[in-house]
Every structure is written in structure tokens, then in C-alpha cells.
Image (cartoon, rainbow, N blue to C red; front, side, top):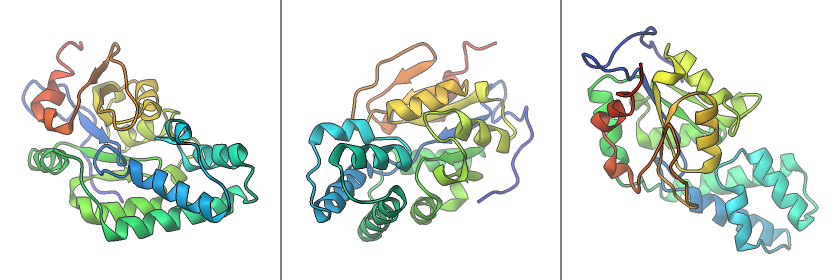
Length: 233
């Protein structure tokens, strides 16, 4: 999904250096990281395998090829990566069809960014079929574009999705604020040169240079995101 976006250099407010906001989806805007794990547990149970709870931190936040591949290798399940991807997407899509809870503060933040005409993109490692279902709940009008994990040759933790999103919005990656919930997503955003707000969902994320860690999206608003740029040249 794309629409007309501002050219590079557009400012969302007088004196603001923030050019765009790039948002992760699962665990950041929608409370679904647990959904993925539950589906993985159910699918592997049907295949005759039990997943170790410690593996949850290994598979969270990454592309399906990585997480599914890890689980196949860890369990020795007789299923191909392609077959497992279909089973996981089917299970997840069924689950979000029943309920799709938003993270606290997500609706307010999206509304504020939209009202203030801040160029905003959804950047996820989930596949397009899943993103489109979630967008129908979040409101597609909140995003100028969205990037899916199966639409890039290298998804998170590589910087490609965030570089593509910034380019699509006509923004300098260094002038983009990214909101992420996992170390995988944070690594991708930082490799792209973006300023990062981490809102950990499953595993802790330590503060670092160019990275701000908060406990909830309720701490994040447009003024907060603009403030991330104040120390930049």
C-alpha cells in the first residue's frame, strides 16, 4: 500500500528535524508476539513435537524463515520451511480474526501522527497477507506505506526494510524515528541509521547511543519523537 508522500526535507513542524516515523507491528502496535508463539506451539504439537519455552526468545521478532527454520532444526520435525510457513500464517490469521488487541498508547500515537501529517510507515517482518489483515484494524489511512517481510530480499535484522521505508517516504534515515519492541528490529533500525525508541515486549532491551528505551507507547508522543532529533546537526 502506497500513497503520495512528502519530498525529502519536508518538516512536520517549524524547526523540527523529524522527517518520518517508522513503526514495527507485532508487539509494538498490536499485542501479537504471544499469538505467534502460541501458534508455533500448536502447530508443532500437531506435528508431534513440544517446543521449549526458552526458544521463545530465539524466534521473537525475526523473519519467519529464521524462526521457522530454527524450530524445524531444533525439533527435527518432518516439515518443509514452505509448508511450515503456510501453517503458521494460517494459524496466526485465524487467531487475529478472533481478536486483535492494540498495545496501550498505539491508537493515540497513530491518531496524533495522522492529525499532524507526519509521514508514517509500517515496517514488519510479517508477510503481506498478515499485514493487510492488521492494517484493516489499525486503519490504513494512518500509513503512507507499509513494508512486509516477504517483499524484501533481506528483512530484519538487516537494515533493508527501514532503508526502503525511508526512501519511500522521501526521508533521510537519520531523520527517521523508529519504534521497535525486539532486539532484532532494533538492530535493523540502527543499522539503517535511524533513531530508535525501544518498547520491549518479550525480552529486555538495553539503552544505547541513539536508542531510547521506554516501558510503554503511552510514554511516546510526537513531541517525544521530535525530541530524539534535537541533538542532531
